[in-house]
Image (tube, rainbow, N blue to C red; front, side, top):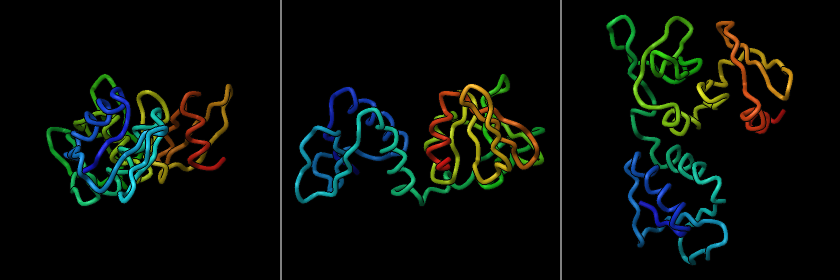
Length: 179
């Protein structure tokens, strides 16, 4: 349960995102999300955020407050007409393809539900980061980071698959890995 002190536009976005994780919005909550520029209430735990970074606040709440949800620890994937429970640590990367959303491990590819955005927010604390518009990568399985032309990178994974980091997501990768 959280209270929101922000613009109407950000309020609507946060309300939509928080509803996905069953986090209620209440005006009498002890935890307050405060958009930068709004007054910080006294006597309550407050998290101040920039309107542009509202999804970071959701990631913070989801990774900290909702850590007990089993769905965060596993994903159910479909391969060869069989369902398999896969742990995030076994997933090298997740990609959106013509077949749908796929979780790729060292040995197989599994069709999974939800969206890339969902896994990006719920597994961010587990080392997953978006590298382009259609792929998330598990940084624990990156074997090499190869500088590429035009401020981009190529990531060589444990299974020798090479994934390209787009220019748009290169800055976040550099910041995350401090390179």
